[in-house]
Length: 262
Ligand code: KIV
View 1: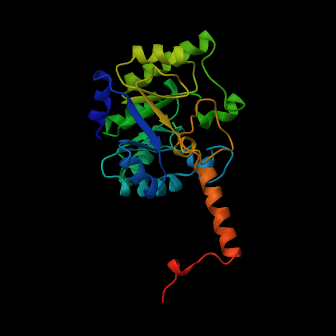
View 2 (view 1 turned 90 degrees about the vertical axis):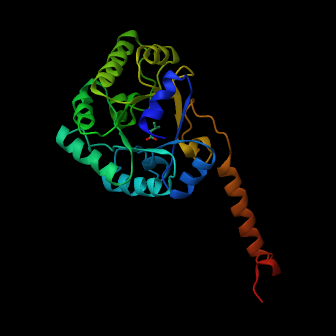
View 3 (view 1 turned 90 degrees about the horizontal axis):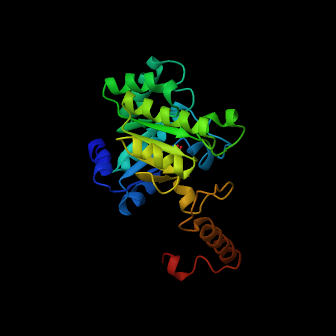
């Protein structure tokens, strides 16, 4: 999946399907399922590293996981998520760090924020780095929100988010993730942009959807937002398998002759 193929989905009215992945094993499974866009999300800070939020994730950690995913991906568009403080301080730092994602094998980077990061977006796109925007409930601002809360419910704030989306489009992003905003606002933003919107907790009217892989597989259940639909219950399956393994070793049933060499 190339960037032009990705953006063409909007004109062709074909939904874009995006999931996160953090390693080679799941990248292969995602591709086998026919999903062609993978976000190496900084959500790995929560679902892989077990932190309360994404703020402590480093560039080194993101580059490591990006290499694993990009190394395994055969067809998928791989997007690297720029971690907190890798792009906020200056455009120069943002461009250098974005370049490191492409050197690690990503095709594009994602960055949180609206009009305030438009200059970073313009600096990156001017040297050929494709950028995906991210608006609404942007997890790197969790302390400003005082928790993970739906954004853009009041008309003033909704207008700010619409203007942010337009500012990002003008700066050159190829798509925008809309997270945890009312479906009606996501519909308006989607209709007013020529680039695709990718929703997560933003209703059905976006041009595509993204979910955190471990949420959709039912592996991560410590915090399940309303917008998550678990399509499997892999944590329950894993628990059952591990308990049976423990039991069978304790009872001398495993290994049996089938699993033994002679
Ligand atoms: O970090 C992440 O996985 C994300 C998606 C939830 C959009 O930003």
